[in-house]
Length: 124
Image 1 (cartoon, helix red, strand yellow):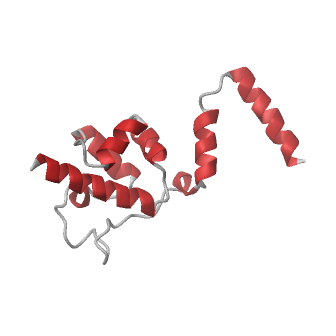
Image 2 (cartoon, one colour):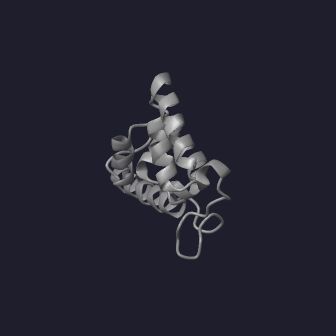
């Protein structure tokens, strides 16, 4: 039973993530878990905590009923994929920009200033 539920949730979050054109790292960062943990979750090797499930629903704009396999109609598209709400503006960035921003957030102040100067020079 637990394995079936883990597989069901894993498939649902993968479909929702792909529809939003997010990487596993994007979702993991927004949910606040390690990318490796999210990967195990998506492969059906583990179940999320209630708190993580809630965050997944918010990040993936998907009902918990859909992720848990409880809704067969209202929140599912014709092909059986989770029905997604409209994407928040910050999720519409290209994957390259999201990856760059993850790296930039880790920089200390001097390196951040240097990156700003390089970016400004590239604009010219």
